[in-house]
Length: 307
Image (cartoon, rainbow, N blue to C red; front, side, top):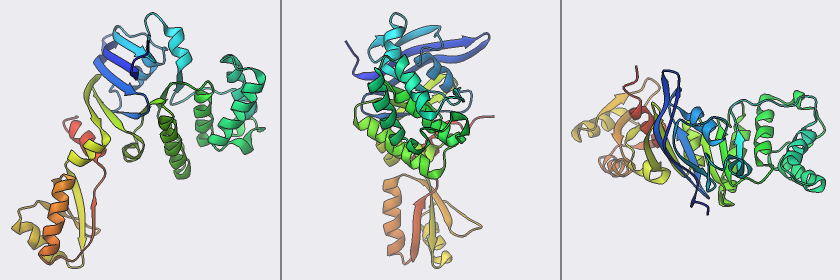
């Protein structure tokens, strides 16, 4: 029987000699959603992904991928998951199409099925025009897209991505976002680790914060954005009346050399109420927006004591 979640992990630990990489980490990745894994370098994100991909054994903990216990049914879990590491090897002398067809064969697709799936995926990742080119001529970003296509060959129920946007240009990042959202809409459980926090807010439904090998929090992105307290940058035609209105309301602010005032921290609701008050007080505001995003604010708060 499959779990309701694509990934269910509880109390996962892993040590490398004296270094404790994971310290009882918990994680849930529901089907039909994109879950973001966020943490500093060394927090344990890649170690966790390697364990979920069955490439590294945990020391302890309960882990199920697509309903399969990784301790007793790792082979079944592998057939249900797609894995895209941060860096991966490619068979450079194969053409792009041959590369995907090789993995289609490995997953047991018939030659006609493999050819059809290859054409479908190359279209989906915008590499169809490169189908007959050798892999070695691809740029870093194109290889990233090919790696994503490789992870999708067998139509996995669970997709694990470690820094998939690395090396992608802005357009390719937008296309990656749209592809991951469409996969989630199709019912895939997507887990993505990335340092590009602003883009994760647009991709993810949920975020799992990891700090020093343990889960520091799990949040719905929509709730996080509504409740997070962050700075807001305000620009007005005349800055002094704006500053006076903030002083009266005892709202902290800092002037920016490039113009405008950074105020807060405030939640979205607090910022909306304050905007109405400032306009009512006569401040002629023409720009009012958060500095960074909610996810960035939460992450910075989590790591503010880092040395």
